[in-house]
Image (cartoon, rainbow, N blue to C red; front, top):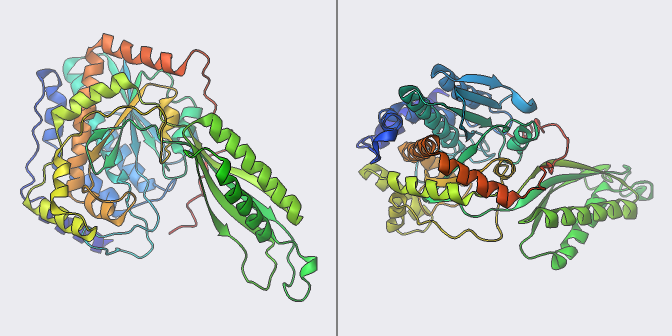
Length: 487
């Protein structure tokens, strides 16, 4: 730990040289909030690096969650801890009255991505977690923005409430779904979301709805050579299920995705496996298609059990909606993102970024993308790619999201390159840009009743009068132990 702390200090000294505090060009009405962020680079640089140095997996983020809660508490927020059955989840609140603005804050790390802040592969500890999705910057940016907004509310004696939702286990645990299911977003007018990225852009892709399900098979053990006829192989059942699923791929919509691993398949070839487990991710841009696929695979799972004379149990580990981006709110964020601008590297940061990109086979000039803001893209009719528990939030309250360049342009997602960059001042600059966008957008909402009404009107029109939120993971309790076996 002391070694890591010393390394962080060295990196901070190295990459912070010449990292002048960014001054945001903005109108006078948001000055108090922006001035706070412009003058507190060191505060949030230290906070994000501390979380980076102690990466914690989903539902195990005790220190990370604790640091954010303490910072918010020190700045006048009231904290509700352990909400929705999750020890590391929290809701931090400041102010009173309407409108109520929610900010999402994540902080979980990814397994196996331990990495030093150097532009080449160098794990700090082999097999240990790392912040490959940048959640060390995510929660800090949202907390910094909330404090800035609180200071603006106090200085202007303005009615309004800001809430920070400490959201654990985004990486597979679907922490926000439990927050939604417990009604913790009731009474919130809008939710602002961001995510660490390698570019600066408003999010328009709705992604995919997803169900994460484990099929657990139970058979009978036996000596695989001496008396195999007395056994019933749970692994055979898993393989039968996987074979059927691979056949049905031809007949599912091309926008759907099905992937699996076999975490448990037996212990020795000469013992008929008594227990086996296969873990599936099933995805589709549309929930109705996802439900049909899940039912189909469920039927195959039962068929595999019958065909191998084993018993199957199904456990839904997580389930998330596709994301619904509020276009009216997204346009406001685009305006404010353009006001804030991109991430400006100093000479040392640029050298680091260029060396990191060479490791990816990218040209040096690609790093220039960090300083740019992409124009607002068209919103596709159907999403694609990954899934997020942000989707569930977006269907119960108007939400918009954007990305800020805490990673070096050209870096792949969930990579050691991301860990290397977001633990430096590059990550800090990106997160503070996100905070500035949040602050400017919050002030727009707090001072423009017509804008807020337009956001709400769009939300009601898109969701429709008959929409009723039903969580895809049912009534199960949070899977608090889903990462406990990982280091």
